[in-house]
Image 1 (spheres, protein in one colour):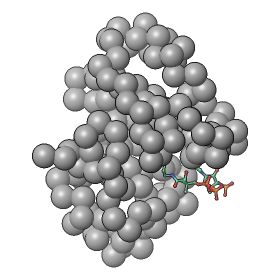
Image 2 (cartoon, rainbow, N blue to C red):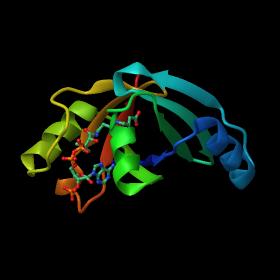
Image 3 (cartoon, rainbow, N blue to C red):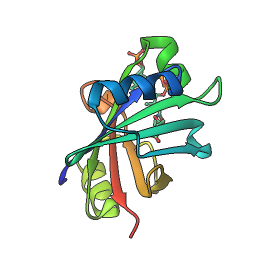
Length: 133
Ligand code: CMX
């Protein structure tokens, strides 16, 4: 894995949270993107090499809605950049990590993504992401 690509933060209201994070970070949101397949609306902020992704639910039964109902707003996942997501998935599966996708799927911000179950990573939801070239 190369680096932390972004940290995902679950928020209840994307507009309010975006405006707050613009003030907090001192940078403007560079992209908002609706990801229908995940039932989320996202807003991205870039700080040097790292990014923050705010995630708001668009459906009552989405992963983000469930997360907020159970734990409240807060850090939802850490995403690591990888060069070859297929090789990395095979490597992690071989070591016993529980992958939540059999195949990489298309995520926000032009990425192929795969999630690793938090039960196999000390309670932290991990995302692998590879830039779609
Ligand atoms: N971080 C840490 N723990 C989490 C978690 C998260 N983000 N989401 C759920 N959990 C915990 C639950 O609290 C629960 O813990 P306990 O068993 O101790 O109560 C456990 O994981 C399993 O929860 P569950 O109710 O059985 O399963 P869920 O239906 O909540 O699903 C998960 C959990 C991770 C499998 C599901 O959210 C998932 O598949 N996530 C991947 C997809 C995703 O998160 N999409 C949204 C982001 C998309 C994007 O970044 O663009």
